[in-house]
Image (cartoon, rainbow, N blue to C red):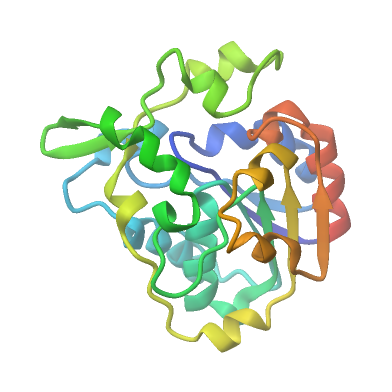
Length: 236
């Protein structure tokens, strides 16, 4: 049995892993798919102070208080920032990191540094009760997340929530980059996303023990769930 912790991306919640989570559980594995603070079923916890560190603590605390070991820690999209920070804090608990079309940051970088396309969305943020929110679940969301003709598109769009923008601009601060670099990695790239990565940084998405390409939309756990399930089972 393997323990998986699945971390969603911006604007999403633990709900997006439903198909993947159930399949992994049915295969006999232990699976956690938490929702990060301020999103989806935890959107009532939004606050002006909520930042990247909050989300890293969400996952690091889960690992610690559930006393999880030999974990396959999976991050999608923005979740790559979160799993990198959580694995840095709790490296002894992590067996493998899996980046699913995800940000792969280094010390001192923010999401907006490794995914500069987000700058195009900076002008669409809105202030609500003192919190700057972006990635609004409007008509453009389906395109942003690559849902296209996905059968789950409408189901997903109904569940998206705006994302606390401070988490996009906060810089990741690592305690032990050298120890973090020793954790084995699986990287799964969607070709369209990879082509849009900063050219000077693109090598990061091609350097790991296992590097795979999955030609599907960015929300690959929804657009190609069986492929994601197969990849994670192999990672286990």
